Image (cartoon, rainbow, N blue to C red; front, top):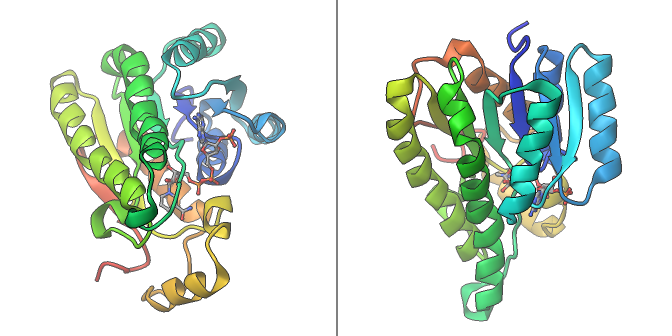
Length: 247
Ligand code: NAP
């Protein structure tokens, strides 16, 4: 299996894309730290699935905006599996409204989770990734970071910020042999997409050349590849998975 014995921390892995990534890596033999903030039950059930399918897993509660909680998660990860090889910064939120109505609070909340959380987790696990044989940092950005989107100035700014951060960390990690990359999903069928009004979803899907939203598995498979040793020569990249929306 491609991930045998590798230890992976996935933030926001109780549900949605994060859960899909955790279960996919687990199926490939990884030890998975399933981070969650509020979805405890679902995080435990993800762990059960992983154990049933050949990997090992623990659920670990931490709000990624709180570095003390993230440091405690690192302790839990080390106690369970030893040093961490792969960090996937997946936790993210939206707080959508057109810019004229956007408050400073809407802006700060999105920055705090999407960028601040990425900072806290990368800071905390950086030494592990540096010291790992072929360590991996994988950040889940979005097509919205490249194209912008009506009502998402805060989210688009945060997701675009992930690109510059990832490239910089890729440069800084390179001499140690570890890599950093982004995945930029298009619109993917999760709770986040469910919150979008039906008429807007119809308009979006009509603009996707492949004619459908992404499934969670479409994104998880890319992360699995980036997390494995098969991707050794790819660093500082953004892998788009958007059904051709940017063609
Ligand atoms: P989702 O279904 O809304 O789930 C969000 C996840 O983030 C949950 O697991 C949630 O944990 C976690 N989270 C939120 N705030 C957190 C915090 N402070 N600390 C720890 N975890 C936190 O979202 P999704 O669609 O799976 O999206 C996952 C990632 O993909 C996000 O970064 C999102 O921006 C990105 N993305 C999504 C789409 C899409 O169309 N769905 C497209 C492009 C990119 P709890 O449930 O435990 O609170």
